[in-house]
Amino acid sequence: MDAVNDGNKASVQLNEVTKRFGDLVAVNSVSIEIQGGEFFSLLGPSGCGKTTLLRSIAGFETIDSGSISINKEEITHLSPQQRPTAMVFQNYALFPTMTVEENVSYGLQVKKVAKDQIRRRVSESLERVDLAGMGRKPVTQLSGGQQQRVALARAMAVRPNVLLFDEPLSNLDVALREQTRRELKLLQDELKVTSIYVTHDQQEALALSDRIAVMRSGALQQVGTPESLYRYPETAFVAQFLGGSNIIKDEKVAHVLTRGEERPSEKHVLSVRPEHLRFSGEGGVDMVVKSRLFLGTSVEWWLQAGGQTLRAWLPSEVEYGEGDTLIATEFRWVLADD
Image (cartoon, rainbow, N blue to C red):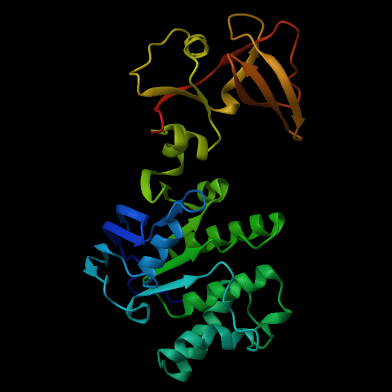
């Protein structure tokens, strides 16, 4: 079976890309180098600029300054149809009056691909997403997960150099979302097509990505592998958004939890992951238990210590004892948010 595109190792270069909507700076001088064959995620809260940046790469938004290149060839001023990209949309954007194969073949017909090539590419694309034999079904008879896979097959059929994903799993229920996420990861591992994926779901980004760019208010906060971002966040925002770290500003609490380690500078605050807080009979921070939430294999504890509320995740068999204090097994100093 052919690869998605002979240029499926295409790299993407964003150079100081800026996009404004009136007085709002939606994307603020973003520069990223995405390697060929990489699964790269843009992660951040709603309104951070990630979807605007993705749409700018696709050509659906015109940037105000900077440049966008694929394989070092600038595409900044090309129309969406002229760019070697394909988008998988959040709402799938399927034609409800068409069959599965008609939806998948639509982009190929627009590009005036020969009919025998269209048949072959549609068949291959449906087979890749495990929908072989369903080509003549109306898309309205498919489940949400199947419709999502039709949208992916349609994008792959045009053999883009770069696949763009705009939160494609957000409309699925939890179980189907996890299943489709696994399938998407297996497919990416097979095809190795360069993919840029937008999501606000931290677990999704961690599970799928080779690298992640965390965005906030239109600007990049940090870029790295899932492991490096989770273990070594540079700012309080990244630590909180990717993993829900406790950001501890109380100097006395920080002093005890770090066992007296000196703070690097006044610009730094202490970050402790919920899974790195433990109960101890002695030598820790005095605390008050505010609530306990049973989550099956773990328990989420909400604790009051030093004037602020902390969250701890502990195995379900671990219980709080009278006189216990709080200690940190791991911690990291991060830059405080502006």
